[in-house]
Length: 237
Length: 237
Image (tube, each protein chain N blue to C red):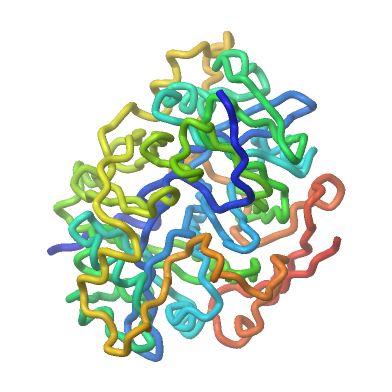
């Protein structure tokens, strides 16, 4: 198996293609982002990285709130469209025929047609270089009722899609299930000590709590040990 | 279309299930993480969030380097296994029959059997609450040569999988392509002014550069405008 180096690139599989929403000058706007992921379980947080000049980012800063809307495959054209045009000169909501609602945070516009909607409150905005990373606390999740099974989001009903970079930059459906997590790996040798099975992958399970308060703090051990650039973080609020 | 609120939860589609590697006390160890995403284009950066006590995190801090390995569907059992057991009492590399190599950073262990391997240098470690978010600069990407088409990573050859949470927590294959990005959205109304089409979704394209230096800095406008918790970030190195 020969390996080829292709340079320092932002390659990751899968990547999301979410519709991030904010009220910009009082008007709902949505744009498409792949630089988005979960960053904390308790409290639940995600990050979205925006180019500095993005119209949606202006609204994120104006309100301190934003939304992350997960589209189904039926909305793939609309999702791509929202990543092609700017809200500065286009009414994306009208052109996509989106219906908007507001939830708990009152200022984060949510798309009815998207089966999953996350309301987020801005916790931190960090300048990473080409992008500003907005860290949002997920304050509420809305799901279209027909996409629930036993009260839980059902991916086979939500029908989300992903974004894959590389030889072609394309959207792809989710395929068939290839195994339950925390389960199929047990076919490989487990430690002899029984009851030693632990969940390493992040989950929302209740046991994964912590005494930490969710604020952005300095990791003590970093100063001495990590060789990267070190940060001293202080909360001003 | 009726919406149901399900509370503040870490719901996002798709999520990755990557094998994050580090040398812990000189020995390569890998664990499975879903809280991982791209956070910056230039320089290329990603984040991985670890529970505080993770064995792999210990190695990340010891070396200031780590790897992100993207498995193909053939390695779904091994990927799940690395998320079930801890490297404290298990030799995951031996039990998964992984072959290891090292690249440019010399201390970030890479899995030969994974078609895509990212070498990362630690830039920042931030305490988010239940998790420590490690931000790494992607220094090099290795791809198995049989997974390239025209020198670019080809998702149909890589055959990665994703992790879907919800009614079942499961791994899923990538499905069929449903459209090229920056393309299929053009079927919806574009702004009248020609040449106004812009790329809003993040990409690695050369035009998306910036004068910023990639360090973690305070966003000036945040102090006045955002309503979230504000951070003043200072580099100590």
